[in-house]
Length: 181
Figure 1 (spheres, rainbow, N blue to C red):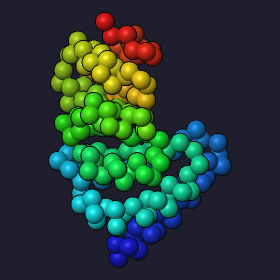
Figure 2: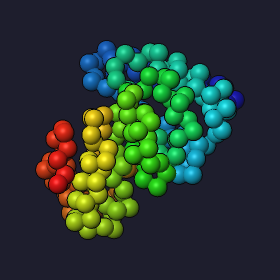
Figure 3: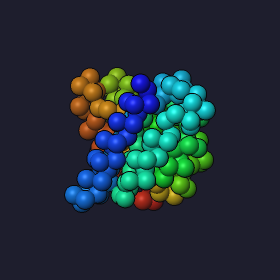
Figure 4: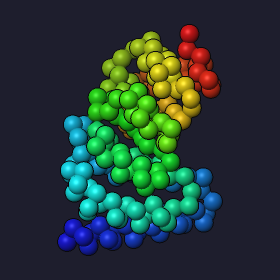
């Protein structure tokens, strides 16, 4: 049953990828949560043996840049995901993955998107948001390959003034090379 579901899903995803390319999309953004905050849903070996062949079928069909979204700590799965030719990875969830370490190890190969903590956007102040945005730009921005965004979907409980502070701070300091002083 698992194999049949994965086969059907990957066949559908191949068609979506091909249609996005044919329609002139600039990139394809897919969402397949593969991890908890504490680690992968499956062992790396199971992931490699059961899931990767189906994702590879999709990867082989995509001819435009591919943004791969998964919450949680994917550290143990990143080598397999990188082998698939993913162009960008989102959201590098705070508290699950260290974006600085991820950038050091994989930043030469992939664009990182995300990492402004949604909990901070919900409970912090605009000044705290601005400080965090500047920190991320300073620590992750150099060398390029980083797009700042929230570390997960923006939920209704995020304070609008904090989302505005994230955007305003990014507009002020986010040009390459980042200037955060």
